Image 1 (spheres, protein in one colour):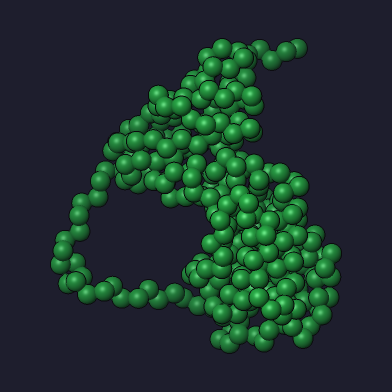
Image 2 (tube, protein in one colour):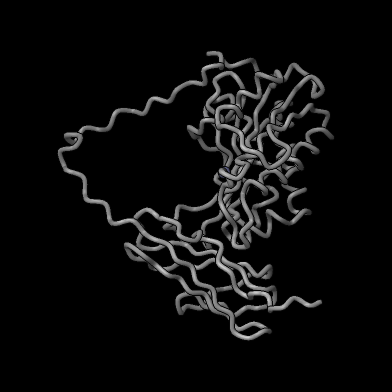
Length: 315
Ligand SMILES: [Zn+2]
C-alpha cells in the first residue's frame, strides 16, 4: 500500500516547538525540504537550499510569542511548516553601581577532585601499544542531545560516529583506545574525564560538533577548533588542529588550538583536548558530518595529529 498522504515537503528543526529563547532580536531557523526542491521561503524571504535539502534562515523575532512560517512548492504542491516559540523580555539594564566600575573578580574553577596536581610527563617514551587514549563522544541520552542540524539530526549522534572512526584510526596506528560511550546513553560531565583514571589512560580527546549562539546566522558561522586548558593539552590540540585543517581548509577556516575552561578538559595531569569538528547547524557542516567518506578523512587527520604530538613531530 502506498502511504496515505504525501510526505511533508518542508520541515523546521530549530527552534524546537514551544522553545523558550532568551532575549534576542534575530535568531536562526533551521529546516529541510525534500531533495530537489529549491524554492523555500521563510517569513517571506527566499532561502538558499543545499543539495541535501537543508536550509538555514536568519529572521527577526520579537519579545513574547513568535510564529515562523516556511513555504515551498514541491512536486506534491505547496507545503507549509510553522513553528511557535517564545522570546524572553529584554533584560533591564544593570545598575551602573553594580560593581563600582571595578573589574569583576576572576572566576575560580574547581579542580577535578580525583585529579593530581602536576602534569604527567609527556608520554613520548611510551610506544603506541603502551599508550591508552580515552576518546569521549560528547553528549548522549535523551536529556543531553547536544545541538540539532537542519534535518533534525542530533549532535550526540554525529559525535559518536566521528569518535568511533577516530578510535578505528588510532587502533590502526597501534594505540589502545577506550570510548567513554559506545551507544546513546547519558554520562555525567565529571564522569567523562574520570574514565581516564579508571582505565589508566594517558590522553583524553572529547569529540563535539558546534552550533552558533541563537542570535547569530547559522548559514554563515562555520569553523573548526580544538580547545585545551593547559600547556600539556595545548601541544596536543595544536598538532590535531593542524592536521584537521589540511582536510577542512578548502571549506572553512580553522580557529586552530584555543584555550577553554570546559569541565571535561580541566584536568591538570592528563593531556586533554576538546574538538569542535564542524558546525552541524550549517547546511554544509551537516552534510560533511554525515558523509562517511569525509568523516573517515577527518578521523584519519585527528589520529595523525595525535600521533604527531606523541612522536614529537616539530610544528
Ligand atoms: Zn557539544
